[in-house]
Image 1 (cartoon, rainbow, N blue to C red):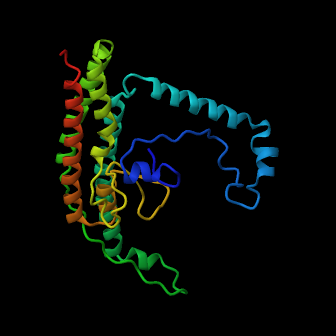
Image 2: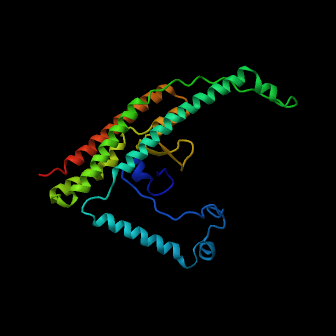
Length: 259
């Protein structure tokens, strides 16, 4: 999933335009990036002598661009997306459960004075305070919504595999328009809490981490910041968004029915 730090940021995070980041990896921990050695000479001598990787990347990008541009219908398979979002939902539910267990352990250590007993008596030490307990949060709205979206995605993928060759020109135009708009269904005009410019509710750069992506950012960051009332608000909002995505997928599927 994409976070921030590149040219796709305004397209995906602000305008809700589906984006793709293509690159080669495996040698990105060499230490030269953004250093004084990150120069054209370094790249020419050590990074990519002969520009082999650059040429290969241009060919891959060009082939993908031609594939999408020449397709009569935007080549998407929605089941993979639905499965990923289901994984994100399980992650945030697990995050809350893990925080609850960690809070219980932390408070037990504070109550038994263990932090103070383990501290170096020759140094000044301020023991940590008790943490508020983590309540049992209701993730049912987003679990139900993502389950519905998964069913819709499966139906879409099966229908397009069966009906693609028989679609009329009008159906293909209509279907393309719906698929192009699908990503924007995942955005909200008011944006994320505290940063209205970022409108995407499935992917966003972390509020404090910058480039790195946070999935389901409204819910996830409310949990991380222990804002329990905000968690409930964001869960309900995300469920609404996922249900709208499911409805949009259903409409796209229905548009492929024989005329």
